[in-house]
Image (cartoon, rainbow, N blue to C red; front, side, top):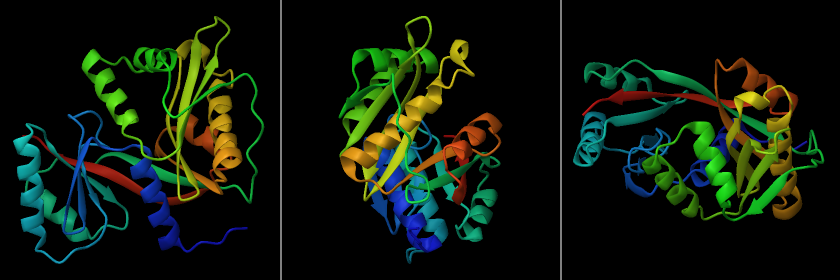
Length: 257
């Protein structure tokens, strides 16, 4: 078994998650990572707390607000469970919305459960083909602008990545997932299933294929992913796949322009 301290594991997982879903532009300010991606997804358009820093808290918050205001975007903070409570109090005072979408960051140790073999899965390394991108746009209901930004984000990946797709009974791509490997961890993203293909195990096949590829091709020793805390079906899927360690939780706080 690969024993890791909670702090060490949390840091590795956070790095893998950031590298596995990169922003288009970033700025670092006194231990905070300010991410920008044309307003597409909160993960790539929010402030991430890498370290405590030394500057006054209110000064740092105002700086971030100015950055996002200049882009015509709301200011969004990603608040992990280990964050200093003083930040939440400051955001309360500044009129931020209540916490949005508590999510769990889960970890799977390959030493405890070796990735299974997966058949009937299409795998593409580096960057997905048009079929994968079109299916993602269809399943997420993406606008052309969102699809374009999503493609730019995937092209910005600087770590090894694989894109998995599984066909449903009608021949269309019924489930997707992708994984990006950093420092021995594969971060799993974009797990989605066509509503007409649910309860067929397609998403499971896609994720299993990503895990197997990461171990075989990149010698990954573990995997991580984020899931909305109250999504019972997703939590059950990942628990069945061996994601049995919750590393930390996070939520978002937003202030509109």
